[in-house]
Image 1 (spheres, rainbow, N blue to C red):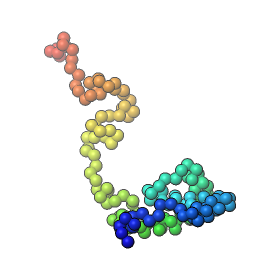
Image 2: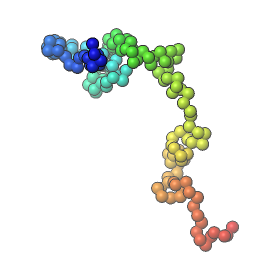
Image 3: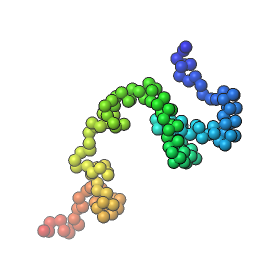
Image 4: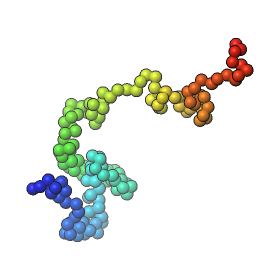
Length: 153
């Protein structure tokens, strides 16, 4: 087997798979509803996204005794055993967090820099003041006194 054939073996349903899927969908949407938990598991692993309709039906399936969630578990287990996800899980072995240890030890912002903005500028929402662009207060410059008041104290 060459590496090109190992990368993408199947990209679409076969003719018979498509026929049976349509037949299942005719039977009260059973084929459509059966794919939603598997697609949710793939979305949890970042492989796809649920449409608004699929998300609605998944929530509705979970309300009914967790049927959607329990149908998702076998697919999630199969995905977790793929090599790319297994390597990440083993890197986090011993932690309950999905954050890798390298991310957890990243440096925090400097003490003089507030978390809501770069360059240490205070947020107008937090200070209650508004700054207009181009004014010395917004640019960080110290305003110069008018020429007549320069030497007076």
